[in-house]
Length: 223
Image 1: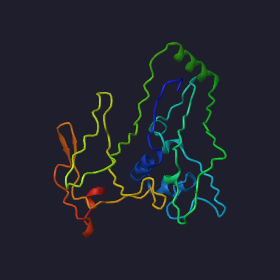
Image 2: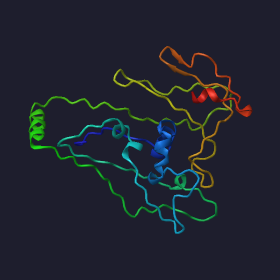
Image 3: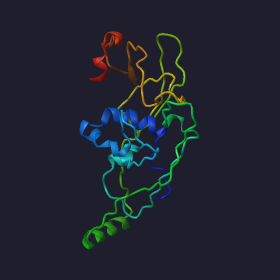
Image 4: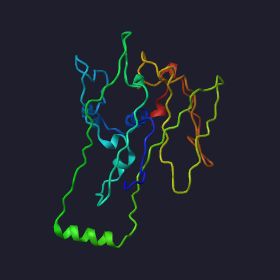
């Protein structure tokens, strides 16, 4: 915005998928087919064409949390496409497939205010007062290869005083990345027995989960 990076999302597909699984309500999921959030059915027609309308709030935390108007600011959306379309396609036949984008549009609502309100906004801008724009950003951290040991400690990051972590989402995938015969939107449980998050000197959860996924004992993970 005005040449300054406000928010970014790394690995948009995986990040929005994990976040959407936890935050989308059943009512929101029912209308997400138009955004490409399709479970079970195909997204394309018989000829392979598709058309989706993706809300920016599904991709960036800024668009989800900041609900006020922005005056006299230049907006830019930079999209970086992956080198391969393998993670966006599930192939059932040994043939070469690729995604061809024929048209891409960014639709932004334009708000018109009354003359009296416009004068008030211009006077406020003339004061050059700082405007806080608080929102939650999403950060994805990937551990490419877990060791063969039964216990592993992963040091993710250190946050400053301005950044305070609110939620942590953990997921596992085995043999799905860059594999055209596997669905990259599916996750694996990997027979996890216990998960703990250490934030400063606090431990979440305090006790052990004692999971046994083979015996269908994993309800504590979804509380």
